[in-house]
Image (cartoon, rainbow, N blue to C red; front, side, top):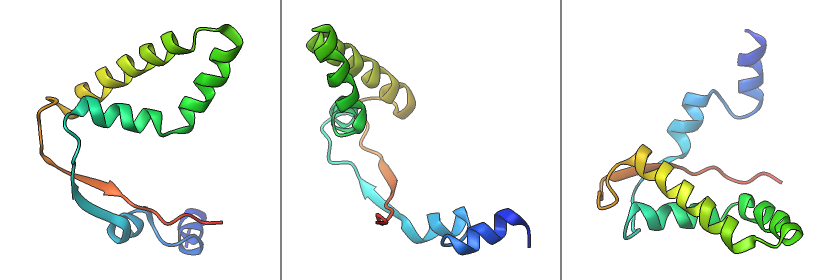
Length: 97
């Protein structure tokens, strides 16, 4: 047994097993890829970091808009047409305390 496989066994199994256990099929309810990208970016710690920096430089709104535009472009580039309603899969992992 290699070091990585013993670590996998200790921490819940291999990546393939974790994916098999926690990967759930889902259909996006977002109206567009833009809406999904904005919701993702605004709901992550990245927003707190940007807002903290913006308070120091007094350009919060401009930075948020620029970050949102960049996130939208990346999401649309990766996921395709904003009107695309294909099925998605999400990895749902339990939180450990």
